[in-house]
Image 1 (tube, rainbow, N blue to C red):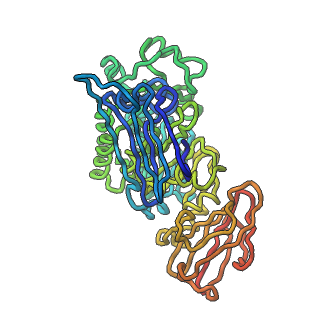
Image 2 (tube, rainbow, N blue to C red):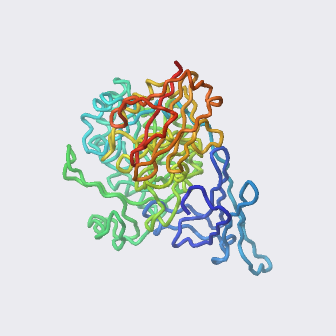
Image 3 (spheres, rainbow, N blue to C red):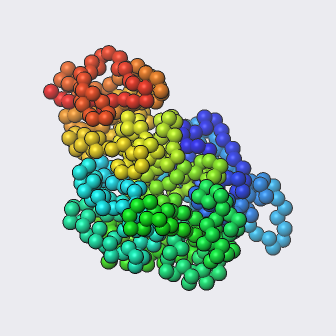
Length: 515
């Protein structure tokens, strides 16, 4: 099911691995949660993203029991009880079943405010990198992410190609000279056919290259058929992946084709070897992971490589919204939850609906229940609603809205040293009298900032109910203002004793300053 406030009384689920990329449940809140994942002896890692139908989960021979098994979640008292069952079966002599379950307790860490408010990303989707560093510096970014399909990194998941590695190294050196950090797109799931080792990997039968329908495969990336190169070269037993056509730069007119690789294979060691080499020779400052096929153990090893060789290094995870017919109704953060302890930040925005309720944002977009923070993506997200969670979109991507003015506001008001209390906290010092108006507060010693947003597409009015004692301020000794913030709000004085009018789908940041 979609994440949010959850079932009020009960929720039930049955196994259906053909149509649903689902094998468990997460239940919880900000300060405590539990993910339960059910497995059998026949477990294998499934393919993710739009490729799940080519490599689905195995229904556990134990829990699944030919579709008889399932899970219920029931509200009981002040909490919830998760019950997993397999249904009735005949247990015969010498037969055995493995009822395996994994438990993850969330959150995995405290939120790092220096990352939340200090790491400012420039991440471009254009082919040419010539102006990346200058643009990042001009707009206040301090971390540059180099995606694949770039003139300095043309081939997906193979950044060390002889065709580009020298120019990539020069770019990283120049970024470091400019005081910027430089992260790189590098994941598993698919691999460019331009990889020099591709035929060695192909020679290992199906150990590395994931077998599939070959030329008859149809996906969102290949809706009208598979590129003829595969028919001439791979012929059979493969799944086609990403197709990128260069529109500009030195690779203009060329294409990059990718092939799906098998999770949980020796490809993971190949991946780690490449990461180690990039840390030593290119001096990368971290990884950008995109709907990856890595297992927990491999990502933990990757984290150790980065921490030992590049101590500042960051790992951030981008994931497309899997909750649709193409992703087979998977919840993205459930899908990668066992990897989140090794992440520093999330970019959960692609194909997201930012008009969904605030509790959906909290669980599915913000990262906060897991000790992380996120960034928005789809059409730039909604800056006003994002500030209720202390997040912005990511600068530079297609149709993004520059967050640079919010970054400056964070610096001017020292957000790194302010304690955030969200609307989800029953002890929050600021509440509204309108369920469509949601408020969070960022609290310092002599200043507090209220972020309030309208969750509807019509004008809403609300009153702010402020617990001044909890806030640590005296109402008669405080000035309340809405300061000017470009592309966000116009300056005005606020009378906290009167109703506040919120524009449709927008809001304000209100500064309470001790006189």
